Image 1 (cartoon, rainbow, N blue to C red):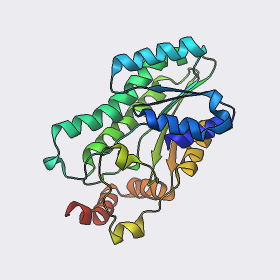
Image 2 (cartoon, rainbow, N blue to C red):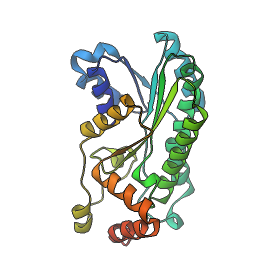
Image 3 (cartoon, rainbow, N blue to C red):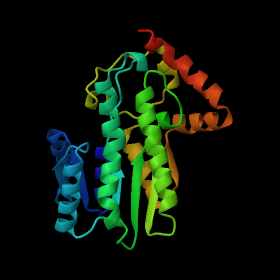
Length: 252
């Protein structure tokens, strides 16, 4: 999804800085940018390293003069097990990437964004950030923290030139399993009937439309919209619904 966000923004004439811990992934993004490659700059950065992130912000601003928008898209999931079976190493890794990585990027660039005539912060949460998904409880906790962090920033920055948007993707056909260092489990027949997978390109377009319209929150996919509605209507029923779809995987 991050790659498609880059390609979409480049197609609109934006100059884009893409960061990733995986250099080969950045090289592939540059290759796919085609004739727009000159407007793309890449940096290999570990977003869980606060010092590296602060150095990136200084370098980017010094080199390009200004940054008007940041999109915190990086995220990983946990092994698909219950909290009782999850190691502290796995817990800390998820929290470091999903929460602290988002926080470090935001803190590093926010002072500069406040000096711009107009600026935007976009943080990618998850459907799991408002709805409990058994077997992904720590991932959900990290994304719920991103949700509240983003909404809190929105309130703190009211009256300033910096706009803030939180995004809740549903099921997107991305490499998040591979990028999280996990094997791709086979979906059950029940899951296949429920999950409608959205393409990363379509997801990116929905997110960028949301930025351009300065939306407070963006729900990506019919599943995210449906479950957001159900959770608002009856949180306990929504939790039971998700459990009924996920229990087969938890029992493997």
